[in-house]
Image (cartoon, rainbow, N blue to C red; front, side, top):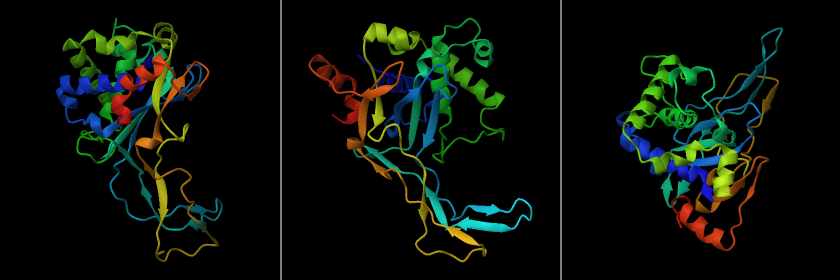
Length: 277
């Protein structure tokens, strides 16, 4: 059995020890988790989610009449907040989600990645994606990185930086065992390990989202015909160890993993760090 997100976490930790430009990352304040993403569907292979956004000024959403441009309605005043996620008592700052099995089935193809890594194996596409998401993390703990040269995220500069970090890592001769799982697509992983699991949240397929908190004292605002109440968060705003679970992923989707016999023993070993067992 393989816990894919735990294998990615071990790889991320190794990357931070071998790539000086990413040494500021604290893997213990991060959680990599899985979500469903079919290879034949459009969507991101992975995403970085910030849990430490700076305190923002109160605000409101509003709507205008398309013809007159007059304000027709607005929401109550609110502040945007990030949920609290704790693992073994430590508050996490970032989450990285990976779409399974889509993440596993990446190829260099004939586009940007192929140009950045000429002649490289398909596994490098997955390594690039992981480094890409790690690089989104701001080195000063202020949320998602802003490029120093003023360029937008996902600029050519950003992609070139990621490629340079990937090459630095590979040039450091990492232990092949740390990278071994990247050499298999999802079908290959199932053939080799039989069962592929990943860390997830109990309220799957949801995960900790940014939410709006209504101000207890509403400041005066522009007069409109309607004031729309701020919705109560539909998901928890605090997560702890009991909210983290393990799911088994397949080509068709996922289900909660309930180990039995030898799998129960192996699961304890594979997910010890994640669950604080």
